[in-house]
Image (cartoon, rainbow, N blue to C red):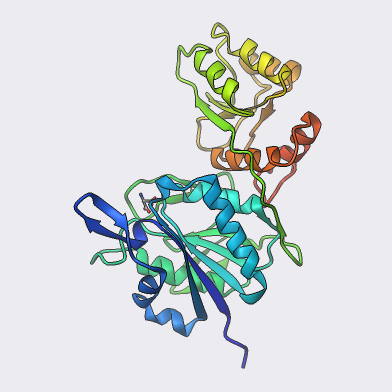
Length: 333
Ligand code: ASP
């Protein structure tokens, strides 16, 4: 008979662990209390619990991503897989960040949470928790989100619904699999190494600017003065308004050694900066980076990871366009 898998449950808070208080839903339940709500998990695997945090994920910071990665690293050899319970609001950022901080893991690192607390009569918490353990006990390498019976690659997840159970979508990449009647059906198997590579350093001075029609350069100037990188969510396949002064702002920032990435506000299909006159020179003369098919969440986390290691322009570009956990497929991969 095969040995029962051992999984580490790492609690960080979120709706799944929340209770109603006078001031609204607040994470209060411990990982042990969560586990006691789904006794059937003990039939799948042996579980140990760590209460790393108990936060609404609105309060999660890059420092917490590092704590989670270190928690997995220090216990990596002891367990066959990891389940991290987390609020849904910033789960996609955490999933992306952990994909850069823990690369090539042959063991599953599964994030899950819920739209309704585990103590509510109508809740998605129990099924999500059970499914997360099922996946963590399977051969599912790398970082993923298990939610509403779907398995989404950590670098491709985005929260696309604020209330209903289907909270996450996989952007520009298929789901890794689905759970049907408690059985994981895998569509894609992630590539992995024989051992993970852990990173610890992040440069958190990465800002994001969403353009609106008529925008000037003032806000971009402000953000670039205070940060090492600026991600500009522009329109369509990408470009900057020609009378806004933003082109000169980007040029000046790049000559001062800052990193600028152009991406799009459009959820699906990504950027293609060279297509229109409004983007062509940015790409071909200034050489700004572009996100192509990456999610904004992944761009934020990847830049923090890259700039934690280097500021050399060619090296930043090389690392940015080198796929990590299938985060960018077009055109580099
Ligand atoms: N505000 C909650 C959080 O992100 C929402 C949730 O978990 O669904 O922590």
